[in-house]
Length: 476
Image (cartoon, rainbow, N blue to C red; front, side, top):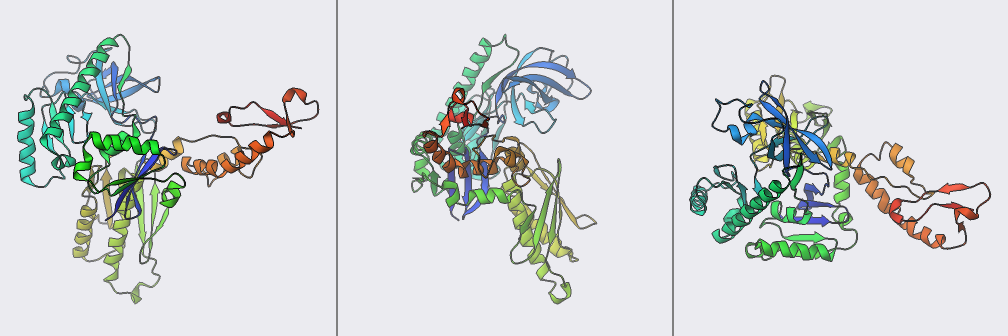
């Protein structure tokens, strides 16, 4: 299987491709707060709800955050104590975002802070040693547990070993562990200096390229495609910093300066994420309808007369539909309760085989997924943990507003058009009209355009985009 990473610094997104298909989409969101660490102040304590609300500063605005009693490290192994004896109102605490805000819900926070690295996760307030579930060999698990006991005293923090940790030497893991420890000590010093503030941001993963190499890159990646030479230099620096070239020396970085997303058909794949109907191979289609906390998926065979087709064809169609459904759920990042209506199968054996196939498809999913057996109505229920927004929510919430010249695509038509609702489509429209701006600049220098003070007749106003940094001019 060929795996590539495509990074577009102009569009602020990256894509992971498996055999030419879009497998995962990473968008550089400036308002992305998952994993950020804040110095917060306790606003209210609810002992009946077993939770507290704190005030954190997001985008220079104070917002409320929710902390469950299970996410308070103060009460770990101290269940006999009440919340009032441990947490006080207006108390300053360190919190980390583990779940983004969704609609009217506040972001979920925790006091069990973890410092992310490429090979390990360092938790300064925990004593747990754990290994990734993707490491199946018992020898690897025992080796990392013994290595953690030798690395530090048992009371100086917990360590979680990632899947990539088995590809490097113990010296590299030890070096990264020291870096994460010093980073946490620096954050403590900064918080002590800003203790007089009600809330402030202490740490945030704002480096987009660093996050891609740390979280997405692995030994199976064959090539990385970028749209600028500066990105390639930064990527080579991070690859050398984490010594990724040792276990993957054949990986190359290619610079494609023009039409990067069009060459890999990423834009068309993202536009298909908004479609309700997805065609299947060899026949049939599925309908995906997403609501606030529920997603309904219906599988249609496309066969009008079922008596002419053998019964063995139905399990094959259901398996092909299950493969496409798992792909769409991962690509669109659908979370919550998912109800799937497969084609009716009377055989219990076929139903069990279909459930086993679904378990194999969601085996290496990053989000926690649970699959329930067939109900009496023949429905399959899937619950997938929600940590961040899906593609449609993100692209619709972060829109680009720009004004155009008197052309076929105007600002009002883009905002009012029912087919153009997403962030991506507006970015595409902006790229299409870029040629019109260049041609207009040539006309702009001619005598057809005069300043406003020289006009004495009835005028027709023409507005420019603020990024052009030009004053308002009027057609004579």
